[in-house]
Length: 234
Image (cartoon, rainbow, N blue to C red; front, side, top):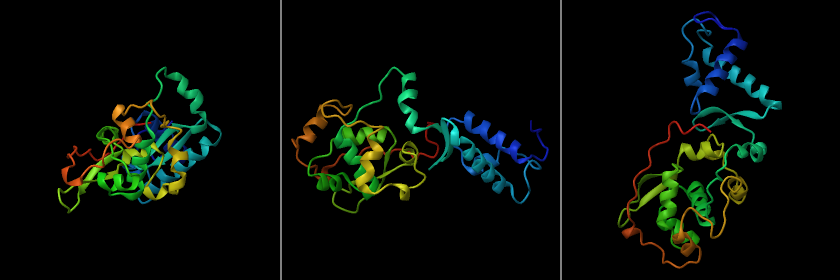
């Protein structure tokens, strides 16, 4: 086992990093991991390179395991393999929340077209965007207000957060798949069911096109979601 203050071998560095990742409540960056070591424990000039090498070694060790060491927007974390979710999910009696197709479409438009206003989304979808949908996305910290458009009423513009990237195992927006593939990525986690939604009856009206598109000049201003520097550990 490694001794504090002594020069560490690669296997010992990997042990420290593995233990830290398993104990952490949120993803850890290379800098987070580098700061775990005191002077003399890593090479003076190549310390961060040693940390990255240890991460790569740990990732390779996961090849035949039920977990992977995944890089997401906020850093590195251990998580269960997606293909094992059917078994792992039996640990919890509660079913995951179900979302409407309207919410998924709204999220996809924000992700691919950001920054966008509610008016932009309504123009593409052809129906009003429910305030409940926007509230749900803000509360989940998947979107945030990134500014106001210089237009009458100064409508809020929305973009995605690091928490959104972390949830969908992405390191950066450029890693998003082509737009036509987004449903295949989202729907295993968020099941779109007509009439069985956490968004409420208002979304059912929206799916039917019952309400008129919102006038951006009269759009209520939601609270800005905080920047997700350290999203919840998966």
